[in-house]
Image (cartoon, rainbow, N blue to C red; front, side, top):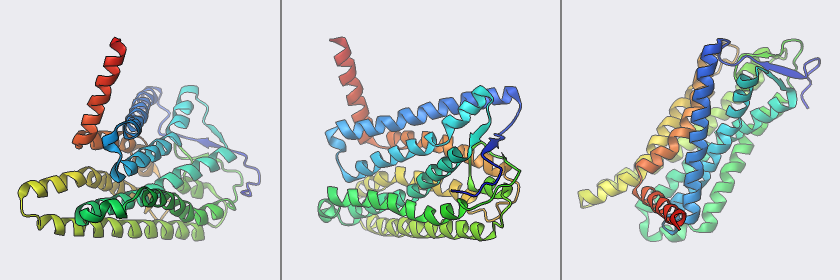
Length: 312
């Protein structure tokens, strides 16, 4: 384990000490967390029970929703507990576990978004071979590979982090355990680990973004070649939700995870982290539901079945 010398616990400063502001933050985070979990669980349930959603696209969406629940659950409930009880202390092992799961989910999300873009590419550019190429076995392999890729990417920074030395300073200027504030309070030389984090982040972003961009270049090229405007509109509509989620995820995460200087002030990163962990997982179910007729139909059908069952 980490060589932590005298430090066995950390203190999470959170976002503020103002009681009134903390109350607002608690309500905001509680509502966004509940909406996020409820929305993503709804999508997972619909993809299980509705026969019209038994396609590769919804299989990936199902796994993406599970990933979003895991991502937000790894951080938000702990901070809600800290606000509610006033207990800002987190044990060393709990901190390591939180870093592991938040980073694993964050990195895996990029690879899963890339896999989802490949699925859209095959569906639009190779429709006659779609069922053969995107078989159930292939889809499962892709999802497993996304998780394994995420684990592989974080393994080097994590192994270096487990050797960080913490002397007397144990106050983390954040609402969760994250690499940047931990590097800030470490009494080790963190230069090599900072560079490793940057390299891993850059490689992940470049590899996955290349896959996304190339997929959509071919999608756009193929779609523009369709003879009718209706066909073009239908093709773009099947990708619109994914493109919105990709834009939100890459836009926000690039800022916080591509910041090379962990020793700098982390106030902005705290705010961006809050948005990433609370708003983004909450928005994704609404983006996919509101912009997808099949999901809306499945949702309405499920509501009618539940209402009919309750009336009996």
